[in-house]
Length: 207
Image 1 (cartoon, rainbow, N blue to C red):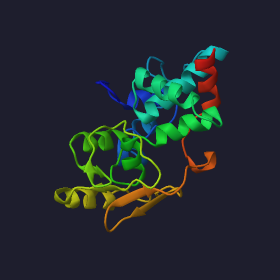
Image 2 (cartoon, rainbow, N blue to C red):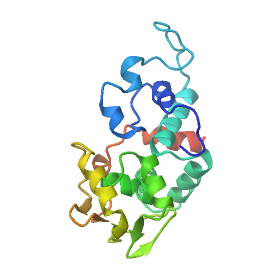
Image 3 (tube, rainbow, N blue to C red):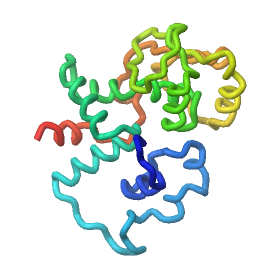
């Protein structure tokens, strides 16, 4: 999360479901939401207030923003860019989010969380078509080759071996031996496994 300094597990509790912000820990019994699923500020057994239509749209937007780890400004700019593209607005928006370099590094399994992927990109461990790119928001194009630095091979070997059974999406081609990946085709909605109700986000920004 951009400049977020509080425990990220509070964000999962606030949204009422896992956002997988702490990598493999989220898949174990140590996950905080497994121990206490009530939103921050509520006592055990106390029911949250019923949300209005605006509240539902706001929560959908906040959950998606936190899931991808973006600031409000970054999230809105991504939405505005998506609205200028041809096609279905909500799918274009999700595709833009998935095309971010930090998200792509996470998707191919070279990082255990999006925050870790963002750090790897910023520290210069990721290359696009043979050139070092240290901008997490860089949009990966179709057939761009995403690779790693030779000096970091051992680090990425450890990450790939500890990622568990998380699979690379069907719209991405990943060579595990060479630690290289590329987009084969733009994903359909059913190929993007995110717990997001994107039409509520479109409604939020279109109000």
